[in-house]
Image (cartoon, helix red, strand yellow):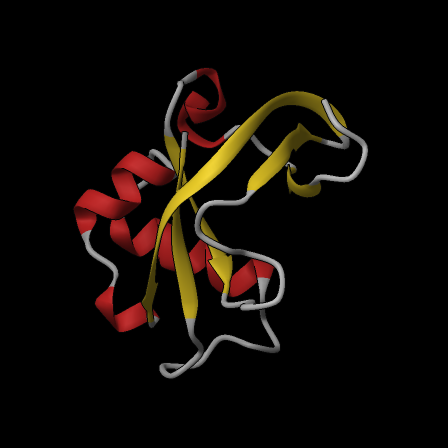
Length: 105
């Protein structure tokens, strides 16, 4: 993997998705870091796994999450995913906090 790539690090391989050629990730909105068409180093607990390109980004707020997105991205139900996100980002979670759903391949 190239040294100059931005990194998307995972602390957990939710739903074993990192074993797939394409997968999604839910992240806080960050227009400086995540850009369609750019390549990223994908790491799990700081250990390199792969290089992937962002194919698409969708912006949403928690109230717009649905069962499909949650089950595919995390492997958990909608209520479980929302609770997990509230624990991950306790100071930021509110109905208007913007998130990204990022598609990588």
